[in-house]
Image (cartoon, rainbow, N blue to C red; front, side, top):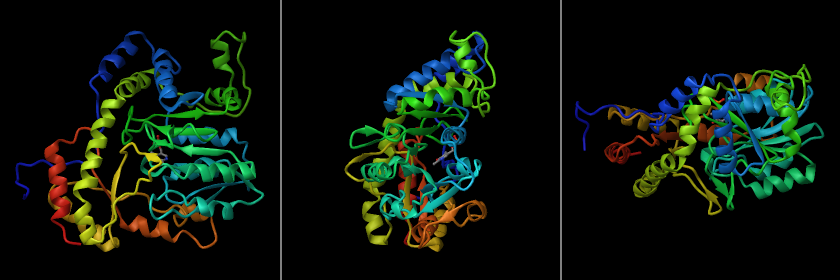
Amino acid sequence: MTMTTTESVIAFNRPHMTGEEAGLIAAALAERSLEGDGRYTGRATELLTKMVGASSALLTTSCSHALDMSALLLDLEPGDEVVMPSFTFPSTANAYALRGAVPVFVDVRPDTLNMDELQIEAAITPRTKAIVVVHYGGVACEMDTVMAIADRHGLPVIEDNSHGLGASYRGRPLGSIGVMATQSFHATKNAHCGEGGALLFNDAGYLKRAEIIREKGTNRRQFFRGEIDKYQWMDLGSSFLPSDVLAACLVAQLENFAAIQARRLQVWDVYQEQLAGWARENGVVQPTVPAECAHPAHLYYLLLPDLERRTALMAHLAGRGVKTAFHYLPLHSAPAGRRYGRTVEGGCPLTERVADQLLRLPVYTDLSDHDVERVLDGVTSFRV
Ligand SMILES: *Cc1c(COP(=O)(O)O)cnc(C)c1O
């Protein structure tokens, strides 16, 4: 099939609206519930906590801010180290570098593109204070091994679970395994409110101080619960709580998460099935999902043989009105990564390679069957 001039461009991402956002936002406004920690924040928090099976959660203004809070909770000091993948979004590293800690970058596994758990131990030193994992595309890291290493060294594990809402590892929801986990509700994520996030706890010991950090370093939340008769400056903190209006938007998304996911998973499965023959014939690698992982169809990627051919396929698809995207530029070789981070011995050669090879196809709830057909025709009409 060739593209006709009447066919519209297929966007790389389109934030899905369930149809219930406007009503809930209007209700929040009518109730004058605009500041943080109102009724809708409560509802969204409860939905999220149940979905992930975490012991508690706090909504935040972004995943970046949830990561910032995790760094404050770890009491990092200048020169402390935090082990993490190089193949992630800058926020994962920023949070800890902002506290003066050194992000220590580890390479990825070639199959899941997650941090290679077998290289974590080589990155650990007496200054290591935490291990941060990112479940790439919501396909779980090898968490049994990661947790065993963390236990052996007495280190907390933080899950940057921005991609992994609704996913699981050996039947356990992602976000419920580390001591803390962060979620993103940015418009590019599966459930969103434009800008938003959450910090989840699986160790009750962090919650009390986290509430203070999130409320400008004050015990204001305890005051509003009637537990104390005045509130004051208790600790370092900032304003990490979102408006209740945005929480109302998130309630709509979380209540309809099953429907959002059903379509995303359908699109993902069609790509995986329909592109298998083409990928084999053209030396293109499709995503690997280990048997112990249930993924949330956060993204779908192809690994082309090299940058030149990735660029060529991207242009070929753009010519047919299909927008695609590459993904993370390695952190270890980025200007700030070199300035603030350290890289494990041997570097991150796989991270550098996949950053050049990876192309993401559109995956979202609003894609029609016809859109999906056009993406498939576009890809399979390309000879690598
Ligand atoms: C999206 C994302 C973030 C940042 O999320 P925000 O909510 O935009 O701050 C952090 N880490 C990863 C892995 C992400 O994908």
